[in-house]
Length: 639
Image (cartoon, rainbow, N blue to C red; front, side, top):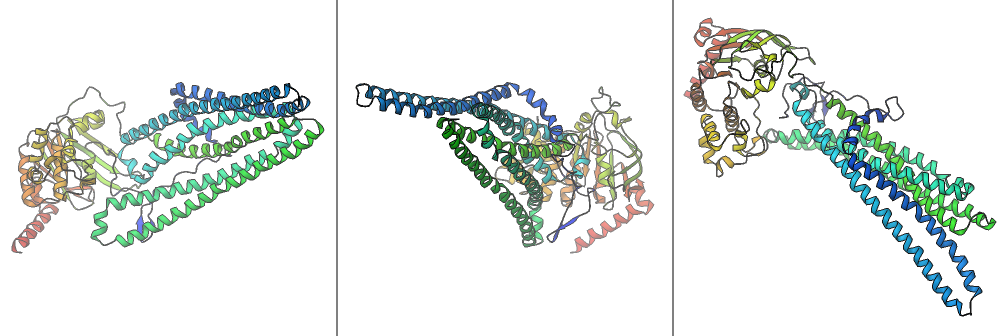
């Protein structure tokens, strides 16, 4: 599952409000429309989706053509109906007062009714095919959105631990929501508008030039201004929308961080400070939203002014041409409808351009994530025939350092643990204990040296086989917003209620669960907020135990439980001594003194190693920790 890890190497912090907010490495600049990296190069990655859903795109685009065709015929029928009026009036006047007058009037009425019916039918057909176009193209875009989101999530699940050291959770959430929505608008509305606009503009201009090239040139005067104006407005919308999107990521990260640490905020009475900091970020978001709204508000008056100008030009120039006999009044009506039909497609092209820009920027951001390769995967040296392990662990001169920082965390670590024995690791905070145990299930890979499992290089063992054989209880307990039973069963999804109960008992959690009204069906809340620290740790231990692993790793997993509970859990674990390899990281000597082998880490190196008695006789770091903890226990007993 996705998670964040403390102590990750990141770029320098940046002050926000009164609290420091982590600043992650900036993303590279997005391609501009006029740069060499034209957006279509970035969007070409989506072509496979068009082919995949061709059964929807092809009928949809054909429907767009048919819908546009019916819409183009309407002005022709209007022209015919308008031009028929003067002829009927002249004919009616010539027969007025005769027996034929009423028949001519009835015929005139029927003709106009026919023209009106044809216009209604054409409009209905155009609307019907337009609906079909939307039901296919837009539906296809929703399918692509679904596929992309699933592809991104699956890819995020497979990425290695180091990826999450370099990316903020809020940014990843934004990529999975807003960026994919921008791409959907490109594969749906943008393509749909483009096809419809091209068909209407080409057919309308062709018909207009056939009727009167002179009037057409005059009518088209405002169109380039409309297209250019909409383009620049769209470009303003794009830049401001991008700024708004970045601020949305910052806001999302802050909310996620605050809610995750709500108890810390309350404990330190920092609600007011956090509210002030959030208000500052929210104010920035509001200001950028208003900037975007002002830019979006500019296009409508521009649209109305230029469309109105085109209509005025058609009436003015067209009136003169009617007086000269070059065109008819019906042609003027036809032109006005053609201009009205063309104005939205021309304006839409400006919006299509900004949709393409925004989709390209979003696709570029997504591509950077999708192109990330997991640093820990099965390679050429992996032996697929390995399907089990027994649990022997050997480190040979292992050194580890983070590539982004270069600081050496572990230095030339060596030890050998036989299968079925217990290894304990102690040391001061920051000595590298967690890093060491994370290398066993290959959450991290050694920078130098070799890690052997069952005498084989760990890289020859398939990652899935290795991790399925390990039960890992991390130092930072994470529980899902689910029931206690489901949190325990997460370690083995096939486990029945008896196995869940047995794992809870072994983790000394069963009595606590039975005290809850809903017992195992108790909902623990987000990150297990309704449970105490010790209960969360024991739930995490039960989750590892239910796997029945060959290697059990407890990374300071008993730090939140009292001494008596620790003693009970260790007694349960001792039942498995000789049956599975156990690695215990702890700052309590009482938790590690029965281990077969104890490592004492200091500044990333093995300072001492041996059994409990041997380490005491050395009178070194381990003995000093032991004396200190005995003294603390005596003082607590006196109190």
